Image (cartoon, rainbow, N blue to C red; front, side, top):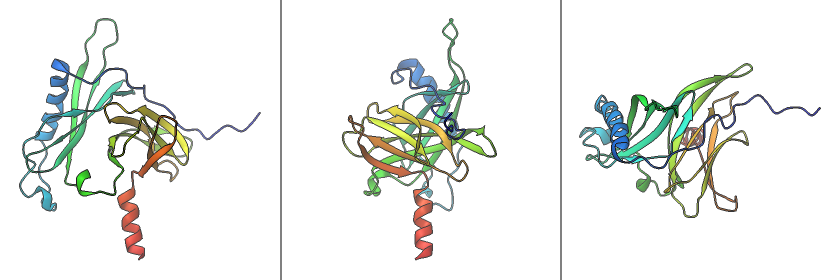
Length: 219
């Protein structure tokens, strides 16, 4: 019997099930996210936040992913002070037997790092840890990753851990959402986008900034 691959959670989350939110459902998602955003205070160490977080603009929703009994729908919006607010709303999905989605909870953060100010970016990414998964001797950080390709012809996004594809998502309206293990036995996530033939168009590490800092320090 051949050796099995290492014990690793692959494709742990359900693929997107629903179209983009609209109507009352979108309002309910947005309310939970905006309530979380209202609890944030500007970071005094960030010059970009001197004017405060500001008022949010139109909310942009990303494909849904369901894991561990919760559905996650990421959100981004630009604010009136030039920041990007990002996060997600999670809830218990309907069970298909007449129940309604319940227990809506929002999570929000802000950043002054914008795609248009970083012309070298090929994928605009956001991420946050939403849980953990215990393997044999280490614990993976189950990480929600969402974003948009900044190059043309991308139809699929994949998450890789040490060369192993651990999640994938079709690009919908130039957006995707992944949910995958990260920081597992020293291996960290990378996200790539592919064209219709499966050719890789671009790749980004979740730790690109850390790598750049290490290189600058070494220099």
